[in-house]
Image (cartoon, rainbow, N blue to C red; front, side, top):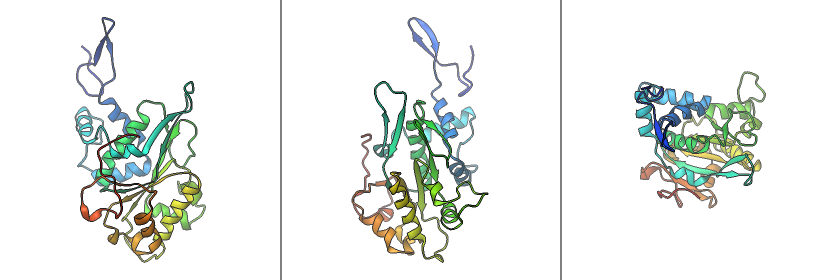
Length: 262
């Protein structure tokens, strides 16, 4: 009997019309989803989880990895996959702008669940940033403060993957974690982030703001009032809580429910 080359167990079979037919390994999607991690996201994960998280594709690590990823996530309330029409092969993924209160580690497992929902059925295809996605394509950018600063001030540097704010308008989704700026010496951080959000809004593109610390500890908030007012007072911006730390909650209505889907 052959063994599955993904999990190492016996090959997976399903009886169809009286015959045993090979079927997909349940762990294969967890192997494939790692190919949808962007360059920036992969660098972050290697830094966060080095020697602590099962990121290899060995059968043992895949089994452990699968146990971390939730089958459902509240984030999918704000992600929608639609077909152009009943006869079209084109599918699109749409997301809403969000404010998410979460540690980076918790966000990672929930976002991996989102990537599985978007890409696993092959109706929508991954394309690396900073390319502009076309029909049936979706991409995202994990945006670090360093990259944002370089795009805002540096202009067209040839050695950068993202060279300008124009490039930051291309991905289907940009995720920016506030609270990672190490210094408030630059007094315009809040305004820079607001410029990113409004630039993408003008293009009809969503931005997810990931709050990883108390707002009072975020340099982007300390440097100005515009971003704070946007995060706290925008009635049209859903606020999602993935971690239960009450001190991190953003004021206003926050979505902590366990209902999923549109």
